[in-house]
Length: 168
Image (cartoon, rainbow, N blue to C red; front, side):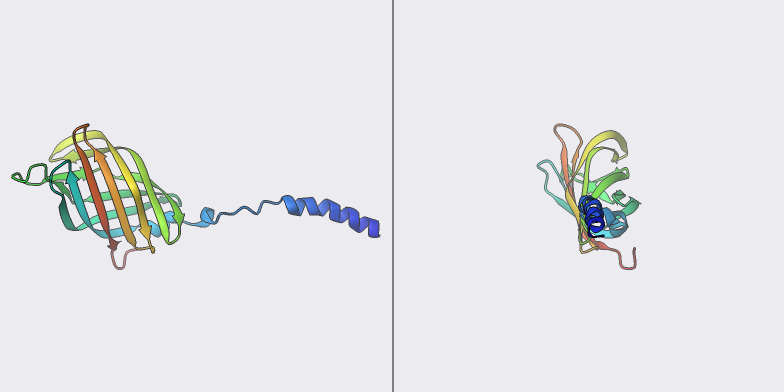
């Protein structure tokens, strides 16, 4: 009988020992649900050497696509290339970002092309990069963007704010 238990334990031990215990924890986090919301943000826009312009109480909507992706819609961007001229309205098409991190610090990443409308002119395939974007504490958004219009025109956009009260 003792021999039976020894053989049985030798058969079971490798199965238990080789069972994967690797769970980083991030597989179970629904980042999309954490970041999905409407945000009220202040947006700072800097075009080249022109002075930065801050636009207050603008809106960013983030919609869950999956646990690890979300769509971002930024509205209310304007930029000033010449202080003696009126601001130019800019509309970016909605873009899909990748999400990772922890529940309390969700990283937002994007580095690809986006279509835009600048002052009524369609501008397809502009380079857009999210520079270390994040949602912290499940409510505070920081979304620094670099929009490359041409080799001569690079627009730095920084949006920062909180989820709208009562939003998801």
